[in-house]
Amino acid sequence: MRRIRKREHVENYLRATYRGDTLLGDVFLEHNALPDLSVEDIDTQTTFLGKKVDYPIIINAMTGGTDFSREINRELSLVAKTFNIPMAVGSQTIALCEDEICKDSFRVVRENIGEDGIVIANLNAQASLEDVGHALEMIDADAIQLHLNPAHEMVMLEGDRDFRGVLNNIEKLVKNVEKPIIVKEVGFGISKKVAQKLYDIGVKYIDVSGAGGTNFIEIENMRYNSIDLSDIYSWGIPTALSIIECRQVSKELNLIASGGIRTSMDIVKALALGGDMVGISGEILSYLLHGGYENAKTYLETTLHKMKILMLLMGKRNIEELKNSDYRITGKLRELVNQI
Ligand SMILES: Cc1cc2nc3c(=O)[nH]c(=O)nc-3n(C[C@H](O)[C@H](O)[C@H](O)COP(=O)(O)O)c2cc1C
Image 1 (spheres, rainbow, N blue to C red):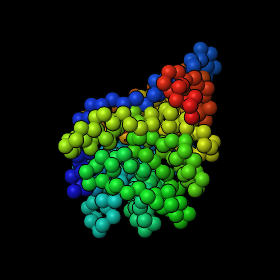
Image 2: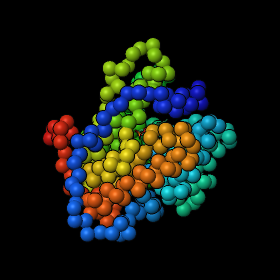
Image 3: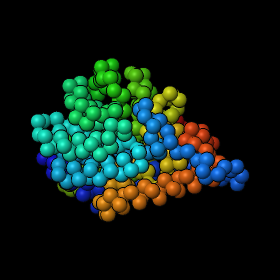
């Protein structure tokens, strides 16, 4: 069942047509006509989870567990290795049994990235301490993402219906797991209130995974169309708002800005709003499935080239300076931010 579902998620992602709004379009960054920089001066390196990476980009959690997803993980991890950026695997619940072939579809990521790179494990936030240990060990992970996905579960016919005790479970894991824990959404965003609760129990890494990109309500609706869910496809906290809300909780939080990130402009805006790193899932998957490793590599290469152009045009020498950019907000985002 899980194996079929994994494949359907990828296939339905490609067939989905609803276009949400991250509200990153409402962010205005100022052009600097006097940058006083050479393009040679621009440094895109940053440190994440204690390791140097060449760009503040993560290939975010997607898949694993089948032959089909092994191939996706193999190619995505080659892209991650090429650019020396972190990669998170998809949920490893499917691999917590003894099936070695299934585990290999995740291990391929560590094999390709090597021990110097960053590989991030992934499980549901209701996972047990024992399962977290297995998931980390399986891929010698640098950290684990625990995903919160109530909207996804609620529209999945076979999904969970009981979300009690999740915060307590995360607290237990934070206290007992040595590796860093990243709490993430899957495309519906994290509010300031939720981020505060997570911060108060000791969570130091949050991945907002806001609305405006991959939409699991639509993806599930394509698996089972017995009821029409299209009137709630717009549910969720737009990525731009979610980043601003989570950043208000603390400057100390490590924030991963994700959800609907597609372009270089999205990346610089997400960093300016308060992201420390930017996660990309659906967009790179789409390039990969339409043209393999080369196509995904070209997409990232051109996107990162344009990111450098934008950094120069903002007069920002490095990622730290980019993160401290002034920004202005307009329209719907401004109205929402004014009411936080
Ligand atoms: C095909 C597919 C499968 C995914 N599977 C997982 C998963 O197993 N675990 C998880 O935490 N997030 C999963 N996600 C969610 C992404 O990590 C990300 O949070 C979300 O897609 C929003 O980013 P995007 O708009 O760039 O795709 C998946 C996304 C896609 C497209």
